[in-house]
Every structure is written in structure tokens, then in C-alpha cells.
Image (tube, rainbow, N blue to C red; front, side, top):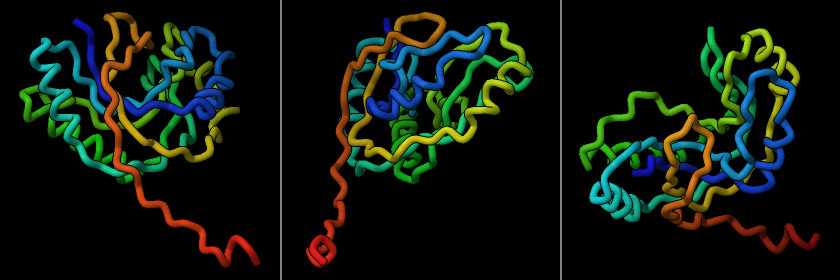
Length: 191
């Protein structure tokens, strides 16, 4: 049974910016560009009936699309670093979407996610990396930032049991409602 999780996809231009951060860190296993994502909710290994119920409930979500940007970098594992990540500029719609997915999972009977939602894009898994090396790597990259991008959908991804980092398979796509974008007034277009 594949492991399931919900996520936001990273558009190609932002993913290419992230890919430029690869290298220069001993003990890092870099995530492939096509596997970059922002995890919303880890669901785990579930049976087919539960997976179908998850898909059915997620398909009913009616939320607007929103804008995100990636900014800053950091690592998890203060004394024994285990991953390097790029940060996500917080957005209330992303937080509301994640909370709704969490409520749906709990209503289905899945246990609450024990981790606090901390939106990020994992760039590398670390094995035997020294804190000093990680800090040195981040020193020159901490001001990382992408241009904002629209998030038009979220996805249900699966992965095979592994040490993490993919490959991930898109099982389902859930569109977000197109937001009303203010049009430029004609007077602003032609002075």
C-alpha cells in the first residue's frame, strides 16, 4: 500500500530557483526537482476504502486559490541535522486549507497529525552532517526568495516506502476556486 499525503506543487520557475541551491553541503542527498512540494497533511499507509473516502471528502473542499512565495532557508534537527529546507511565506488561505484537510482526516478516523504545520520545501536529506557545515551552507543562502506564484490546486501524492524524497506519484488533483482578481482600470492602461 502506498503512503499518501496532500501537498501543494511548486511551479517550474520556483523549482528551478530552488535547484540552484543544490550542492556544497557534505552528507546531503538532494531531492530531485520534480519532487519539490509543500506537504499539507501526511496521511500514511491506508487501505483502499479509506483512501477512497479521503479522496471523496477532499474533492468537496471549496476554497479559493491563493498566492505564495518561498523565502528563507533553515534545517530540522538542531543537534543532529536531518534535512535542509526552503521556507514558505505564510498565507491565511494556505493555513485554512491545511486545517480543513486535517479536520477531514480526523473525521474519517485517522489520528491527528502529531506535528505542528510548518510549511516548507525539503531540499535535502542529511546523513551524518555536522551542524557547523549546515550553518556554513545556510549563511550564504538565507536571503533566498522566489517571486510570488498562484496556487490553483492541491494534490494527493503517494510514495513508496523509502528513506524519503520521492519518487512521488500524483494520485488525485483538487482544483481551488479561481479567485476574483481586480482588473486594471482602463485609465491606468492608457495615460
